[in-house]
Image (cartoon, rainbow, N blue to C red; front, side, top):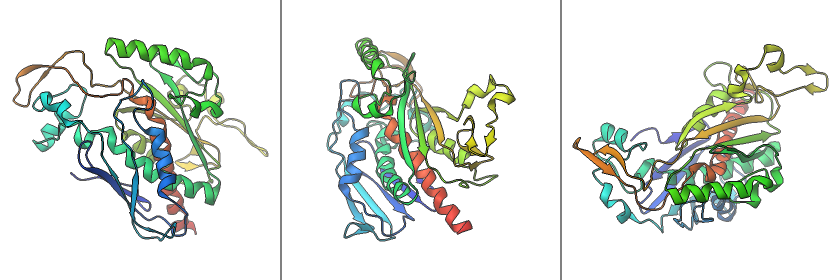
Length: 353
Protein backbone atom coordinates (compact mmCIF):
# COMPACT_ATOMS: atom_id res chain seq x y z
CA UNK A 1 0.00 0.00 0.00
CA UNK A 2 1.44 3.33 -1.08
CA UNK A 3 0.53 6.93 -0.23
CA UNK A 4 0.56 6.78 3.55
CA UNK A 5 2.34 10.15 3.81
CA UNK A 6 0.68 13.54 4.05
CA UNK A 7 2.36 16.91 3.50
CA UNK A 8 5.44 18.23 1.71
CA UNK A 9 7.71 19.89 4.29
CA UNK A 10 5.78 18.93 7.42
CA UNK A 11 5.27 15.27 6.58
CA UNK A 12 3.22 12.74 8.50
CA UNK A 13 3.41 9.03 7.67
CA UNK A 14 0.94 6.81 9.51
CA UNK A 15 0.99 3.03 9.92
CA UNK A 16 -0.96 0.26 11.59
CA UNK A 17 -4.41 -1.33 11.48
CA UNK A 18 -7.51 -1.08 13.63
CA UNK A 19 -6.99 -4.48 15.26
CA UNK A 20 -3.23 -4.77 14.91
CA UNK A 21 -0.90 -4.59 17.92
CA UNK A 22 -0.34 -0.83 17.51
CA UNK A 23 -0.81 2.23 15.35
CA UNK A 24 1.73 4.97 14.86
CA UNK A 25 3.18 7.75 12.79
CA UNK A 26 6.47 9.38 11.87
CA UNK A 27 6.54 13.18 11.58
CA UNK A 28 9.32 14.60 9.47
CA UNK A 29 10.14 18.30 9.14
CA UNK A 30 9.08 19.58 12.55
CA UNK A 31 11.29 22.54 13.49
CA UNK A 32 13.52 22.08 16.55
CA UNK A 33 12.96 23.71 19.92
CA UNK A 34 9.21 23.18 20.30
CA UNK A 35 8.24 22.10 23.80
CA UNK A 36 6.00 19.05 23.59
CA UNK A 37 5.11 16.16 25.85
CA UNK A 38 3.24 12.87 25.53
CA UNK A 39 0.63 14.22 27.93
CA UNK A 40 -0.12 17.22 25.69
CA UNK A 41 -0.70 14.90 22.76
CA UNK A 42 -2.76 12.57 24.93
CA UNK A 43 -5.11 15.40 25.90
CA UNK A 44 -5.97 15.93 22.23
CA UNK A 45 -6.44 12.19 21.73
CA UNK A 46 -8.93 12.08 24.58
CA UNK A 47 -11.13 14.52 22.67
CA UNK A 48 -11.59 12.05 19.76
CA UNK A 49 -11.70 8.93 21.95
CA UNK A 50 -14.56 6.43 21.81
CA UNK A 51 -16.53 5.24 24.79
CA UNK A 52 -16.94 8.66 26.45
CA UNK A 53 -20.72 8.67 26.02
CA UNK A 54 -23.50 6.30 24.96
CA UNK A 55 -23.62 8.05 21.58
CA UNK A 56 -20.31 6.66 20.27
CA UNK A 57 -18.64 3.28 19.85
CA UNK A 58 -17.99 1.64 23.22
CA UNK A 59 -14.49 0.55 22.23
CA UNK A 60 -12.32 2.01 24.97
CA UNK A 61 -8.70 2.54 24.00
CA UNK A 62 -6.30 4.17 26.44
CA UNK A 63 -4.55 5.98 23.56
CA UNK A 64 -1.42 6.48 25.62
CA UNK A 65 1.16 7.75 23.18
CA UNK A 66 4.85 6.84 23.30
CA UNK A 67 7.35 9.30 21.84
CA UNK A 68 10.12 7.10 20.46
CA UNK A 69 12.30 9.75 18.84
CA UNK A 70 12.62 13.38 17.85
CA UNK A 71 12.08 14.82 21.34
CA UNK A 72 14.85 15.27 23.90
CA UNK A 73 14.56 16.98 27.28
CA UNK A 74 11.01 17.99 26.39
CA UNK A 75 11.82 19.74 23.11
CA UNK A 76 11.76 18.70 19.48
CA UNK A 77 15.23 18.14 18.05
CA UNK A 78 14.43 18.64 14.38
CA UNK A 79 14.81 14.92 13.67
CA UNK A 80 11.90 12.60 12.81
CA UNK A 81 9.33 12.29 15.59
CA UNK A 82 8.05 8.73 15.96
CA UNK A 83 4.81 8.16 17.90
CA UNK A 84 3.25 4.80 18.78
CA UNK A 85 -0.04 3.88 20.46
CA UNK A 86 -0.89 0.32 21.45
CA UNK A 87 -4.31 -1.11 20.60
CA UNK A 88 -5.61 -2.49 23.88
CA UNK A 89 -9.36 -3.04 23.37
CA UNK A 90 -9.82 -4.66 19.95
CA UNK A 91 -12.35 -7.50 19.61
CA UNK A 92 -11.46 -9.19 16.35
CA UNK A 93 -13.90 -12.07 16.96
CA UNK A 94 -16.77 -9.65 16.30
CA UNK A 95 -15.79 -9.68 12.62
CA UNK A 96 -15.36 -13.43 12.09
CA UNK A 97 -18.75 -13.80 10.41
CA UNK A 98 -17.94 -11.19 7.75
CA UNK A 99 -14.44 -12.46 6.97
CA UNK A 100 -15.55 -13.38 3.45
CA UNK A 101 -18.51 -11.02 3.15
CA UNK A 102 -18.47 -7.54 1.65
CA UNK A 103 -20.07 -4.82 3.79
CA UNK A 104 -21.95 -2.31 1.60
CA UNK A 105 -20.82 1.27 2.10
CA UNK A 106 -17.40 0.23 3.37
CA UNK A 107 -14.02 -0.08 1.69
CA UNK A 108 -14.33 -3.89 1.74
CA UNK A 109 -15.24 -4.16 -1.94
CA UNK A 110 -12.65 -1.73 -3.26
CA UNK A 111 -9.86 -3.10 -1.03
CA UNK A 112 -10.68 -6.61 -2.25
CA UNK A 113 -10.60 -5.51 -5.88
CA UNK A 114 -7.33 -3.62 -5.42
CA UNK A 115 -5.35 -6.02 -3.22
CA UNK A 116 -7.19 -9.39 -3.50
CA UNK A 117 -6.61 -9.61 0.24
CA UNK A 118 -7.96 -7.52 3.08
CA UNK A 119 -7.87 -7.18 6.84
CA UNK A 120 -11.53 -7.65 7.78
CA UNK A 121 -10.93 -6.95 11.48
CA UNK A 122 -12.65 -3.62 11.93
CA UNK A 123 -11.71 -2.57 8.42
CA UNK A 124 -7.97 -2.83 9.02
CA UNK A 125 -6.22 0.14 7.46
CA UNK A 126 -9.51 1.68 6.27
CA UNK A 127 -10.73 2.03 9.85
CA UNK A 128 -11.18 5.45 11.44
CA UNK A 129 -8.76 4.17 14.09
CA UNK A 130 -6.03 5.51 11.74
CA UNK A 131 -7.20 9.06 12.42
CA UNK A 132 -5.87 8.76 15.97
CA UNK A 133 -2.40 9.43 14.61
CA UNK A 134 -3.61 12.42 12.61
CA UNK A 135 -4.84 13.97 15.84
CA UNK A 136 -1.51 13.15 17.52
CA UNK A 137 0.48 14.81 14.72
CA UNK A 138 -2.02 17.65 14.61
CA UNK A 139 -1.41 18.35 18.30
CA UNK A 140 2.22 19.14 17.49
CA UNK A 141 1.32 21.25 14.46
CA UNK A 142 -1.33 23.32 16.22
CA UNK A 143 0.97 24.05 19.16
CA UNK A 144 3.68 25.32 16.81
CA UNK A 145 1.16 27.47 14.93
CA UNK A 146 -0.22 28.87 18.17
CA UNK A 147 3.17 29.71 19.69
CA UNK A 148 4.81 31.08 16.55
CA UNK A 149 1.87 32.88 14.89
CA UNK A 150 -0.94 33.00 17.42
CA UNK A 151 -3.09 30.77 15.20
CA UNK A 152 -6.08 29.35 17.07
CA UNK A 153 -8.04 26.44 15.63
CA UNK A 154 -11.48 25.34 16.77
CA UNK A 155 -14.14 23.11 15.30
CA UNK A 156 -17.74 22.29 16.12
CA UNK A 157 -20.68 20.16 15.07
CA UNK A 158 -22.71 22.25 12.62
CA UNK A 159 -25.34 19.62 11.81
CA UNK A 160 -26.26 16.09 12.88
CA UNK A 161 -28.74 14.32 10.63
CA UNK A 162 -31.61 16.78 10.08
CA UNK A 163 -30.73 18.87 13.13
CA UNK A 164 -28.74 22.08 12.58
CA UNK A 165 -26.67 22.95 15.62
CA UNK A 166 -25.12 26.24 14.54
CA UNK A 167 -28.16 28.48 15.02
CA UNK A 168 -26.45 29.90 18.09
CA UNK A 169 -22.67 29.55 18.05
CA UNK A 170 -21.19 29.68 21.53
CA UNK A 171 -17.72 28.23 21.09
CA UNK A 172 -17.14 28.28 24.84
CA UNK A 173 -19.69 25.46 25.19
CA UNK A 174 -18.24 23.18 22.50
CA UNK A 175 -16.16 21.14 24.93
CA UNK A 176 -18.99 20.88 27.49
CA UNK A 177 -20.99 18.19 25.68
CA UNK A 178 -20.19 14.92 23.86
CA UNK A 179 -21.24 16.31 20.47
CA UNK A 180 -18.92 19.35 20.25
CA UNK A 181 -22.17 21.29 19.84
CA UNK A 182 -21.88 25.10 19.91
CA UNK A 183 -25.54 25.59 20.91
CA UNK A 184 -26.27 24.26 24.43
CA UNK A 185 -30.00 24.53 23.76
CA UNK A 186 -29.86 21.82 21.08
CA UNK A 187 -27.91 19.16 23.03
CA UNK A 188 -31.01 17.46 24.49
CA UNK A 189 -32.50 17.25 20.99
CA UNK A 190 -29.30 15.63 19.71
CA UNK A 191 -29.37 13.11 22.54
CA UNK A 192 -32.97 12.15 21.78
CA UNK A 193 -32.18 11.78 18.07
CA UNK A 194 -29.18 9.55 18.76
CA UNK A 195 -31.14 7.42 21.26
CA UNK A 196 -33.80 6.81 18.63
CA UNK A 197 -31.18 5.88 16.02
CA UNK A 198 -29.46 3.49 18.39
CA UNK A 199 -32.75 1.73 19.21
CA UNK A 200 -33.62 1.38 15.53
CA UNK A 201 -30.12 0.18 14.63
CA UNK A 202 -29.70 2.87 12.00
CA UNK A 203 -27.23 5.76 11.63
CA UNK A 204 -26.97 9.33 10.36
CA UNK A 205 -24.46 11.75 8.89
CA UNK A 206 -23.02 14.99 10.22
CA UNK A 207 -21.34 18.22 9.18
CA UNK A 208 -18.31 19.63 11.00
CA UNK A 209 -17.08 23.21 10.68
CA UNK A 210 -13.66 24.43 11.75
CA UNK A 211 -12.07 27.86 11.83
CA UNK A 212 -8.43 28.97 12.04
CA UNK A 213 -7.93 32.49 13.35
CA UNK A 214 -4.86 34.73 13.02
CA UNK A 215 -3.67 32.87 9.92
CA UNK A 216 -0.89 34.89 8.24
CA UNK A 217 -1.66 36.28 4.79
CA UNK A 218 0.34 34.73 1.95
CA UNK A 219 0.07 31.00 2.67
CA UNK A 220 -0.59 28.83 -0.38
CA UNK A 221 0.39 28.83 -4.02
CA UNK A 222 -1.59 30.39 -6.88
CA UNK A 223 -1.88 27.32 -9.13
CA UNK A 224 -1.26 23.71 -8.04
CA UNK A 225 -0.52 24.30 -4.38
CA UNK A 226 -3.63 26.31 -3.56
CA UNK A 227 -4.33 26.44 0.16
CA UNK A 228 -8.01 25.67 -0.35
CA UNK A 229 -7.21 22.79 -2.70
CA UNK A 230 -4.87 21.26 -0.13
CA UNK A 231 -7.52 21.78 2.55
CA UNK A 232 -10.11 20.00 0.43
CA UNK A 233 -7.72 17.12 -0.22
CA UNK A 234 -6.86 16.84 3.47
CA UNK A 235 -10.48 16.80 4.58
CA UNK A 236 -11.54 14.33 1.91
CA UNK A 237 -8.82 11.96 3.11
CA UNK A 238 -10.69 11.55 6.42
CA UNK A 239 -12.76 8.38 6.65
CA UNK A 240 -16.44 8.84 5.68
CA UNK A 241 -15.93 12.41 4.37
CA UNK A 242 -18.07 13.02 1.28
CA UNK A 243 -18.01 16.80 0.72
CA UNK A 244 -15.95 19.86 1.66
CA UNK A 245 -16.83 23.55 1.65
CA UNK A 246 -14.49 26.51 2.05
CA UNK A 247 -16.14 29.72 3.18
CA UNK A 248 -19.66 30.05 1.76
CA UNK A 249 -19.17 26.80 -0.14
CA UNK A 250 -22.23 25.60 -2.03
CA UNK A 251 -24.22 28.56 -0.70
CA UNK A 252 -22.34 30.79 -3.15
CA UNK A 253 -24.51 29.32 -5.93
CA UNK A 254 -27.49 31.25 -4.54
CA UNK A 255 -25.54 34.46 -4.00
CA UNK A 256 -25.13 37.35 -6.38
CA UNK A 257 -21.66 38.58 -7.21
CA UNK A 258 -22.38 41.79 -5.35
CA UNK A 259 -23.15 39.72 -2.25
CA UNK A 260 -20.38 37.14 -2.50
CA UNK A 261 -17.41 39.40 -3.18
CA UNK A 262 -15.76 40.40 0.07
CA UNK A 263 -15.45 44.17 -0.10
CA UNK A 264 -12.37 45.76 1.42
CA UNK A 265 -12.03 49.03 3.33
CA UNK A 266 -8.99 50.67 4.96
CA UNK A 267 -10.16 48.95 8.15
CA UNK A 268 -10.27 45.50 6.55
CA UNK A 269 -12.69 43.10 4.86
CA UNK A 270 -16.44 43.60 5.26
CA UNK A 271 -17.30 39.89 4.89
CA UNK A 272 -15.63 36.51 4.51
CA UNK A 273 -17.55 34.47 1.97
CA UNK A 274 -14.21 33.32 0.51
CA UNK A 275 -13.30 31.58 3.77
CA UNK A 276 -10.03 33.47 4.17
CA UNK A 277 -8.53 32.26 0.88
CA UNK A 278 -8.32 34.22 -2.39
CA UNK A 279 -6.67 32.78 -5.48
CA UNK A 280 -5.43 29.85 -3.43
CA UNK A 281 -3.59 32.14 -0.99
CA UNK A 282 -4.61 33.08 2.56
CA UNK A 283 -5.91 36.63 2.92
CA UNK A 284 -5.24 37.04 6.63
CA UNK A 285 -8.92 36.49 7.44
CA UNK A 286 -10.23 33.49 9.34
CA UNK A 287 -9.86 30.28 7.34
CA UNK A 288 -13.23 28.50 7.42
CA UNK A 289 -13.89 24.94 6.26
CA UNK A 290 -16.83 22.54 6.59
CA UNK A 291 -16.86 18.78 6.02
CA UNK A 292 -19.84 16.47 5.45
CA UNK A 293 -19.62 12.91 6.79
CA UNK A 294 -21.81 10.08 5.54
CA UNK A 295 -23.93 7.86 7.81
CA UNK A 296 -22.16 4.89 9.38
CA UNK A 297 -22.37 1.79 7.18
CA UNK A 298 -21.77 -0.81 9.92
CA UNK A 299 -25.32 -1.65 10.96
CA UNK A 300 -27.08 -4.55 12.65
CA UNK A 301 -29.96 -4.15 10.17
CA UNK A 302 -29.59 -6.92 7.52
CA UNK A 303 -28.72 -5.85 3.97
CA UNK A 304 -27.98 -7.45 0.61
CA UNK A 305 -24.41 -7.96 -0.55
CA UNK A 306 -22.00 -10.52 -1.98
CA UNK A 307 -19.10 -12.53 -0.64
CA UNK A 308 -15.57 -12.57 -2.04
CA UNK A 309 -16.64 -15.29 -4.48
CA UNK A 310 -19.51 -13.23 -5.86
CA UNK A 311 -22.28 -15.15 -4.16
CA UNK A 312 -25.35 -13.34 -2.84
CA UNK A 313 -25.30 -13.03 0.96
CA UNK A 314 -27.00 -11.16 3.78
CA UNK A 315 -24.75 -8.95 5.90
CA UNK A 316 -25.28 -7.98 9.53
CA UNK A 317 -22.39 -6.08 11.12
CA UNK A 318 -21.84 -6.84 14.78
CA UNK A 319 -19.36 -5.21 17.13
CA UNK A 320 -19.01 -1.68 18.45
CA UNK A 321 -19.66 1.14 16.02
CA UNK A 322 -20.51 4.83 16.01
CA UNK A 323 -24.14 5.49 15.06
CA UNK A 324 -22.79 8.79 13.73
CA UNK A 325 -19.08 8.99 12.91
CA UNK A 326 -19.32 12.77 12.72
CA UNK A 327 -19.75 13.06 16.49
CA UNK A 328 -16.05 12.34 17.01
CA UNK A 329 -14.84 14.03 13.82
CA UNK A 330 -14.34 17.54 15.20
CA UNK A 331 -10.80 16.91 16.60
CA UNK A 332 -9.88 15.14 13.35
CA UNK A 333 -11.00 18.05 11.16
CA UNK A 334 -9.12 20.44 13.47
CA UNK A 335 -6.00 18.26 13.18
CA UNK A 336 -6.07 18.16 9.38
CA UNK A 337 -6.58 21.93 9.26
CA UNK A 338 -3.54 22.35 11.52
CA UNK A 339 -1.42 19.96 9.44
CA UNK A 340 -2.23 21.81 6.20
CA UNK A 341 -1.48 25.22 7.71
CA UNK A 342 1.72 23.95 9.30
CA UNK A 343 2.93 22.56 5.99
CA UNK A 344 2.16 25.82 4.19
CA UNK A 345 3.84 27.90 6.89
CA UNK A 346 7.07 25.98 6.31
CA UNK A 347 6.66 26.20 2.53
CA UNK A 348 6.15 29.96 2.76
CA UNK A 349 9.22 30.31 4.95
CA UNK A 350 11.29 28.24 2.51
CA UNK A 351 10.22 30.33 -0.50
CA UNK A 352 10.00 33.84 0.92
CA UNK A 353 12.15 33.69 4.04
